[in-house]
Length: 152
Image (tube, rainbow, N blue to C red):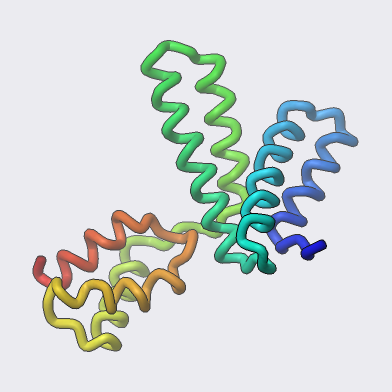
């Protein structure tokens, strides 16, 4: 059996603690996250890196945000509250988001390192940035910032 990733182990330990504390709501949410991490680990057939685990948690958080929006539109406050709770719980396992200034600085460094001068070279810049910002910045916002800085 493959070893658990660091984040998966932490979430699993927290789920066990929630079980012992009798916190059913928290335990059930954490068990969902453990299942998502385990599925990814099994599907990838390799030892997950922290970046791999962060991708899974970010995907799960995005799902919660989308469901939250739909439930709020439908007037289902009970379900919206649960999705909000789970999204906030997930945020506790994610690294702190980069500030706009930090992100802009990293983009400038990546553009210089890649020698990029036009929007056509955006892929080179993104390839350098993505491993550095994994889980700490929204890919869509990052892409837009790179595009603007390259004059596109």
